[in-house]
Image 1 (cartoon, rainbow, N blue to C red):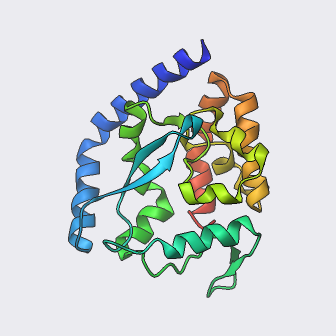
Image 2: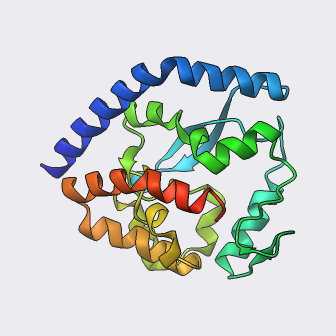
Length: 208
């Protein structure tokens, strides 16, 4: 019953948002194209419920054909608890100085607007509005057995870790929050997390 209700909310919200935001989404796509050569959308293989592979959509925030070696190294550091110090002295796992990111890409990432095309993934049933972030396949070698519990539900655009990053200071904490969501997920919890997402983005400004 929960899955049916969750799916109904996902479809209603995603469809309504795509219709209402259509002019804004087209404007972002145009700005991305004008800022740097390449398509407006970035497509990447991710893992969903049951570790099933799907293509996740985002607005492109990097230079076209950017090497994923930088992100693979960031995943390795994150999984092993190695922090990266940025030029402003702030300790983070994911470097804010990623040379692959375009000027417009920095703004899109900081505001979370690059994630909006995933509303299409929600409509297609590959993602939900709320759930653990979809994993990239090369994360799996760093998973412990209990980490795989996060694949019990559909991945989401936002989730428990996204709104409680201050409580998730390392890779283990991130996984703990993702797995915790699978144990407590409900319509009420999903609506609560959706409401908490925008304040969380404003508070964190995409810096983690």
